[in-house]
Each structure stands twice: as structure tokens, then as C-alpha cells.
Image (cartoon, rainbow, N blue to C red; front, side):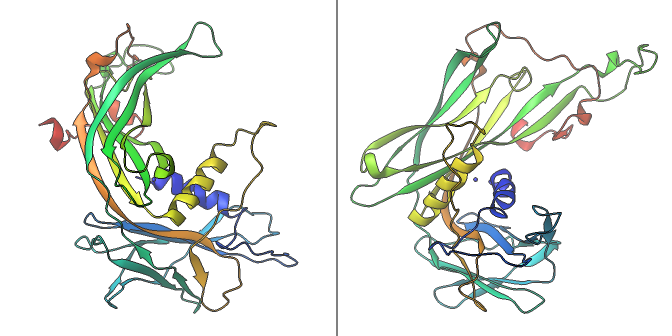
Length: 346
């Protein structure tokens, strides 16, 4: 939900709207700051990320800013008492060993102790199995926008799988991609003189298309049926479909509390500021302060099974004429770009 983009937005949003899973009425009469803990483990090999930060003091002129918390002791413990210690990669970011992965049916608890002696624990999280992905397919779509001369076109992405019967299931999907970017560095112009000033490199790059979509679903209305669910829209931005596009889909099985957390978070992040928007809602947390259980807490720790699907998208599905963006520069200067050819392209 990777979920890095959603988690970054979630941290900023949570410094304003925070509560425990059971809402607590908190009257703030003095400046306080709150520890923010979030991250998850999956059934894939690590490293898995846990972020430990602190919101600025309420009442401070810098409210909403984030302080990275270093030198914390961060542990993941299973139901048998086995403990894995995370290593601080950089301030506020803690990683499990690469060899660590969650097991279906096992239960995990996150434990955090700060250098100041504050102790936090998540509620235990059990990993439920995710059904196999039967298919991922695409459908071209083009729809009008507010500009009568511009249509929004691209590919809707659908996933197909069989939902297990006689049990409650909740799903989360994360969609990323990598695409080829073609440019013309030999036609680069000097920004001052506008004279042609050719560059020797590079005309072919590969751009990581991270965080295209994060979607969730409850099987309340579809229990036991075959599911065909739209999970993303790949917009034709005149760059994405120039030459080749490889999609990556992560299909997570999550619990009911995690579903509710992501549902409320997603709704809050989609608020556009109109009078028809829903009112702000409290975003629950499954993290508790062991020193002061009644204190407000912020964050979420998850343990999910995940199945992955990757393939090159058939760009012949784009059924209307299109134009590619023209870039007369070194393609390595573009955002999230590299000239190193991914293994999948070999």
C-alpha cells in the first residue's frame, strides 16, 4: 500500500487526526508530541520496513513536521516467543533481516522501545492466506475531461481470483510498474543561447512508476464467488507507453482491522475540499503506549500474506492514435529514471 507513498501521506495526516482503535476524548491543554510507528511484514523475504517518527508538538508553529526517531529498539515477536531485531538503516527507518519473512497462520507483535525509555506494542497480527491470482487483464478506456479537447485515456487494470467461502476476507492491492523512456539528447539546446548542444548520453532509460494505485476490498457482498476487481488505471501520459511497460501487482490478504484502517485513511486522502466531502474521521491505531495505555497513539503494524504478479503489458490494447512526449535531453535527468537495463528486459 509499495505502500510507501500511502504511508508517507498517512503520517502527515495522522499528526492531525489520531486516536486509538477505541476513540479517546483528548483535550490538549499543553504542548505534546506523539510517536508515530508504521510498517508491515509479509510472507516475502525481507527486508521489511518499520518507520518510527515523532510529530511536532501540538501548539508548535511547526505542527505537521516530522522528526525521525533514532536509536530505538525495534523487535518483531511471534506467538512462540521468537524475536527478530530490526536494524536502523537510517534515522527513523528500521529493517528486518533479508532472510526474515512471515509465515501463514503465525501471529506477530511489534515492540518498540525508544532511547528515552518509552515502550510501545502493537496488537498481535495473524497472517491469513491470500488466494491465488487467476488472471490480471486490461481494458482500454477513454473518457472526457473538463477540457472538451482533451480525453483521459489509458488502461484499466483488473484482477481475477476466487474468494474463499464461509469466511470473512479482506484484500489490499498495490500496483507499480517500470517503463522504457526514449529521449533525444542529441537535440538538446543550450538554455541561454538556444543553440543545439548535443549530449552524448542517454537516449534510453527505464523509469520506475511507483505507487500507481492502492486499493482495498471486503468480500462482504461477494463471499465465496469468483472476483473480478478493477485495481488500477494506467493513464496514457505520453511517456508510459512509448516502448514497453512492465506491471507489478501485489495481492495482499489483510485482517478486518487493517481493512478499516486503510479504508478510513484512503477516504481521508481522497478528500478534495468540496462541500460534498465527508467530514474528517479518526484513523484508528493498533499501537499502544505501554507506559500510558490511555495516551493517544498513532500508527499501524500489519502482517500480510502477499502474492505477486508481473508481466509486460500488451500495448496493442491501446486502440486510439496517441502521441509520445518529446524530450530533448539526457533521459537520466527524468524523475525515477536510470539507464541501467532491468533484468526483465534481457
